[in-house]
Every structure is written in structure tokens, then in C-alpha cells.
Length: 480
Image 1 (cartoon, rainbow, N blue to C red):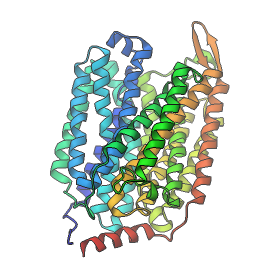
Image 2 (cartoon, one colour; image 1 turned 90 degrees about the vertical axis):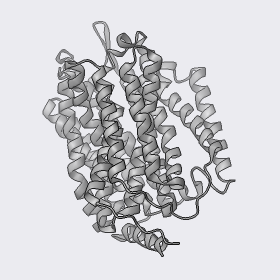
Image 3 (cartoon, one colour; image 1 turned 90 degrees about the horizontal axis):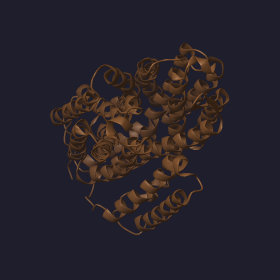
Image 4 (cartoon, rainbow, N blue to C red; image 1 turned 30 degrees about the vertical axis):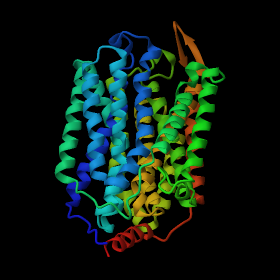
């Protein structure tokens, strides 16, 4: 069957897809400057207002494997269109919200847009020549960190100097620009192989399992780790994911092909993704607090929300700048080496914090080093995945890999939260983490990054350029 690769302008395509990833990931940090104001804005309690952040995480986790499979079945471009609609609608709903429920609804819709990132990475494999593939994947993957890091100071500036609703109207406009850009630039890619069927039962059971798991992890500290609610959520997650796995192994067209996922390169890359996601997020939780705590604590640096965002922004810039270097390293030595180097650089960044956490410039260096490591690691993981799965499953496999990173960030939030809560002190009317608590959290990040490096060493090695040759060979086979 002849399915020719569509004509494409590589530079424009990569630019549009990277911009798409930045906008999608921007939704994750959009409300951070508003956290303290949300209870007043929405006329609710601080505990209820925290759902504004949690629901986006849950929606993204459920959406990614579903949109990935739909992209493999029906074409990635139309599914990308479908992902932009809830981004636009959800942003508009949030902009008009004055109470908790519509804000949660809008934020949930925004979370559905995270499926754009793995779909975009998969399109790159479908249409780009092999010599441009590594660099393009690296840039697209780093867009997740770039959007989160650069979005924070922008959102803080808007929140401090304009009405908070402007943030969400701006998000709606950016999402509309993404929709138009996809329409104009992104080509329709042929569906590879024989079209199968969508697996609704698998989607429901996986969704239930993920929601229960992530709720237990993210809300366990509030509910109590040994409370009946938390334990019931964990139990429900185990049952739902067990049913999902049993079902997926029985049917011909699974939502997630667990046999492919169990292949050693894919399995180990996904495990490394969980750990790298943990390591990436830990410093994102700790450093902003160190920057904003009052100087009277003896270790806080007394920065405003806007200043904190500006000090954190260079880490996102470093992710973008390092992506070409990571691409060349992957092309020359293989993505396994790039992932290993990235994990070690993250560990170096955390290790340097023991000497540098006392000043704003020191923390800038720490986050920049970590940003370099995350940029290298995030660029390598999709290349490892796509070099180990058939082209008919690239979107689903990339989406599952993105999900594993999200699981890692959720676990990171829970672990760091417990450490900082246990190692705290009373300062006036406030309970604040101690300096020892922050140091412990940073050392955990360093240790976890080293675990990621050890997992990477166990990934089967391939000759330099093997991933690109395999992708090119599979594409040629389809075109014959």
C-alpha cells in the first residue's frame, strides 16, 4: 500500500509544534501566581481551591493515553485539532468563572490539551527526514519544561499588574493561535498499517485507575496517608489497573499494547521517565519556596512572586538552548547516552545546591544546571521509545511515556511535601519548612537522579544512529 510521506516545511512544522507544546504546558503553571488568591476569588476554602490545580493533572493523565491511541487509529492531525478545542473552551470558562465549579470545569478542559505534546512528537517521526529527527524531537520534548518555566514569570507579572481574568483570556487566544497554526502548517499524516478499533473499556478502566492513584498521591497529605479515603483510593487504583491489564492482554486492539510496553528498552525507558519526572519536579517545588520565604528565617531570600519567576525562568531557557546539543549527542552516541548524561547533570545540579542555596544567584545556577539535565533527558526519552516500537504505535507509546513523567511529578510532589511538612518549624503564626528540610528534599532529588542514571545503564544499547535508521527503514517499508 502506498502511503507517501506528505510534503512538509520542516522549520515551520517544528516551530509550530514546539509552540504548541509550550502553550499546552503553560496551562500547568498558569494559576501558580493565583494560589493564595483563589479562595477569595472563588469564595471557597483553601482546601477546595487546591482542586483547581489537581484537576488539570488528573485530566492530563487520563487524556494522554486516550489521545495517543486515537492519533494512531484516525490520524494525529485531527486528534490535535480535537485537543485544542477544550483548551480554548476551558480557558474561556476559567476567564468568566466566579465560583469553584466552573473554574474546576475549565481547568479540567485545559488539562486535556496535554495530549498535544506526544502527538506532536509522533508527527515528527512520521514526516521529517531522519537527519532532522533528533533535533526536532529534542526541541519538542523540551517545550514541556520551557512552557512551565517561562510561563511562571509572565503569569506572575499579569497577576500583579492586571486583572487575573486576563491570564485565561490570553490562554484562550494562544490556544486559538495554536488551532490556526496546526491547520495551516501541520500536514495530515497517513494512518500506518491496518486501522484497528478504539478500546473504550480499556480507556475507562485506565482512567479510573489513574484518577484514584493520582488522587491518593496528591491528596494523601491532606486526607492523611493512613486515612480510609486514601487507602480506599490506593486499593481502587490497584483493582482498576489490574482489570485494565487483564483486559488489554485479551483483546486484539488494546488501548496500550502491554506486550510492546513490556519490551526491555520501552519498560526501562518508562521507568527512567518516572524517576526523571520526580527529579525534575522536586527542585520546582523547593527553589520557589526558598526564594520567597522571608529573610528573617535565616535561609529565605525574600523575593516577590514576580522576582521568583524571573529567577526560575533561565532554567527553561537552558532547556531550549541545550536541545541541539542533546540532538547531536543522540545522533552520534545514541539517545541512551544522552539520557544518561542528562540524569547525571540533574544530579550535579542538586549536588551543587548544598553549597549554592544561600543566594539568589546560587539558586539560579542550580536550576540552570538542572534545566540542562532535564532538557537532555526529555529529548532522549521519545527517541528511545520510538526506536523500540512499530510506527503504528508511536503516538500511543509516546503518550504513555508522557504519562509516566506525570506520575513521577505527582509522586515527587507527595514525597517532597511530606519531607517539608515533617521537617518544619513555627515562625509566628506560620509553620515553615526548616533549612534542613529543604536540604533533605534537594538531596533526595540528587539521589533520585542517580537512580535514573542507573536505570538508564540497564537499557539495551544501540549503535549510534540506529534509532534514525530504524525509523527511516520502517517508513520506507510502509511507502512501498
